Image 1 (cartoon, helix red, strand yellow):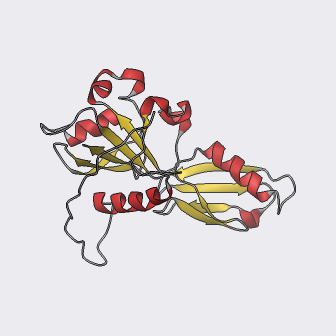
Image 2 (cartoon, rainbow, N blue to C red):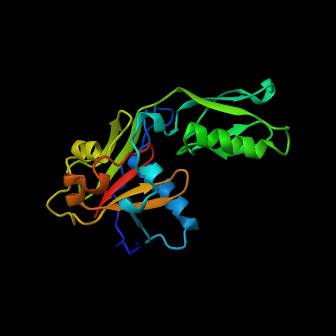
Image 3 (cartoon, rainbow, N blue to C red):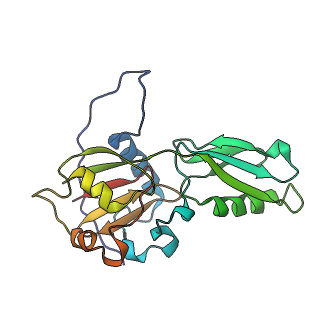
Amino acid sequence: MAGNVPSFKFARGPRRPLGSAAPRPSAFALVAALALGSAGCASAGQYVWYGEMPPAERSAMASDYIIGVGDVVNIRVYEQEGLSGDVKVRRDGKTALPLLGEIVVAGKRPLELSSEIETKLKQFVVSPRVTVNVTASQPVYISAIGEVQKVGSLTLDPPARMVEAMAQCGGPNDFADKSKIFVLRQFPTYKRIRFTWNAILHNDDGAASFPLRTGDVIVVE
C-alpha cells in the first residue's frame, strides 16, 4: 500500500580531495543519485511495503545472486565472439554492449539479464543464445542516514540482509519513528521500500532477512 513520507534533511559531508580513491559510494552521493532517479516517479513520497515486493526481490538465496555495481560480468553470445566478453558494471548500474549500446545490468539476476539480451539481439542475430556469468563480485556497499545510532557507509558480505545492516548502524536512535524505516533503491528502477523496527526484530514476513543491494540507502525517520 502507498502513503506519504515526511521530508528530511541531510548534513553535507566533507569533500574528498580530487584524485583520491573511492572504495565505496558515499552516503551523500548515493542520496543525490537516488533523488535524481526519483524525479521520474509520479510522486517521490510514494512507497511500497517490503511485504508487497515481488517474492523474487525478497529472496536472499545464494542461487539468486543479484548483479551489483562493480561486478565483472561475462556475457557470451553463442557463435558471436564479437558480441561476447567481460564487462564491468559502472556506478550508474549500466554497461555498454556491441549493437545494443548501454543497458541497465545492476539489480538483475544473470538468467534474467541473459533473457533480456537475447530479446534485444533478435533484431540483429538469428536465434541468439546468451549466457551470463558473474566472474568477479564485490561486497555490498550501502548507506544509513537519518535517526540511526551511526550514520555512514556500511560494507556487508553478500547476501546482505536488512538485520545485518541495522546491526552495523546501531539501529534507530531515541528520536526515531520506528514505524518509518525506508530503503531507497535505485536499481533496476527507483523504489522506496518501507519497514517497521518491530517487523525487523521479529522477522515478520522476512523483514530481517530482506536482501540489500549495493547503492541502497537506509533512511530512518
